[in-house]
Image 1 (spheres, rainbow, N blue to C red):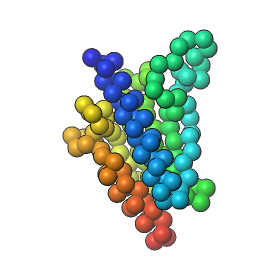
Image 2 (image 1 turned 135 degrees about the vertical axis):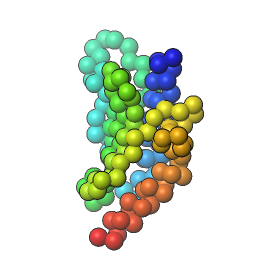
Image 3 (image 1 turned 60 degrees about the horizontal axis):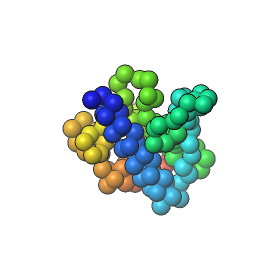
Length: 127
């Protein structure tokens, strides 16, 4: 059961990566990989079975990080996706749901991410 839950988390992480990249591009922001999964880096000749190698990314504005997104590595007991806005205390912990990531019990939708990114950009413009 836990393995199926992990598979859902990593599949939903891949969806979120696509949303993040598209959202950054639409707003003229940068999208950069920060780190790969440790078990991808040190896999040697073993097969790699996660749907992506990317464990963390950042969205940048003017070369400075605006938002960091990361997923727990496979060996972590309590796996989640974290989103953190830089320069503030806002952060989100998302967990695997049946079909989408969950923010508590609420689905974390593409529209929710778009709202979050719009608010972050609006905050930059206010500075």
